Image (cartoon, rainbow, N blue to C red; front, side, top):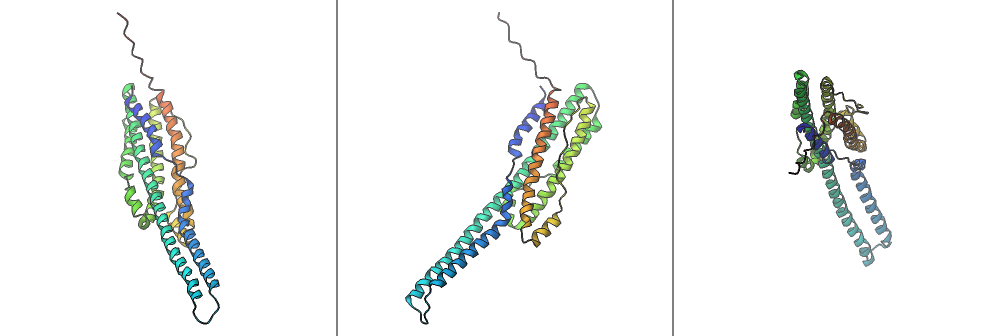
Length: 278
């Protein structure tokens, strides 16, 4: 039984937890402050006009005037409480969104490093089994894994979620750039892997990414978000959610193809014969 092959199977099983799809509906979060502000303002003005309409047209204060003003003050106080409550709920949504985005980045990157290490281990096992010297090709694969370990370090998802209101821009920056760099680095590893297994007589064929994650301009997204009053932030968050979603779906197809073709190189172990009756 091949240990690297069993590790590969385990890596594929863990992607159900590490490569989670997120709903594009999270993109509405940047618009919520505007929506809440408009709703609260509309309520306040509606109460003000309603209360003013109920104030009697007299030149001297009366009990009826005081009676009409009382609900106005209560309504304004209630609107303030509603606004604070709404923005507190909004803050919770932002915290949850940031935590989900950062934690799935960490989980996917960590799983991919383990997967690549196991692919290197399988290539070494096959090379030893066939007596082939592939030290140069194997070194290229291992170098990609080392670079990933150095550059794809884990971010503290809880910390970024708690202080997300202050560092959201930086969080959006590294989420955009990290996935783009990750995919390019992963493609380099795959090319080295294909050459290695082809030299071992195990050709692997699968479709390339379509489409790959583009190199999006952080400066452009930031400026457009500012000049549109945060409206462009809806698309920005949508990109942060859907780019990894697409990456995960294509990665799943590639991994299944690799697993199916590599499994054929290691026949299942022969069953242990049962002892004959004495």
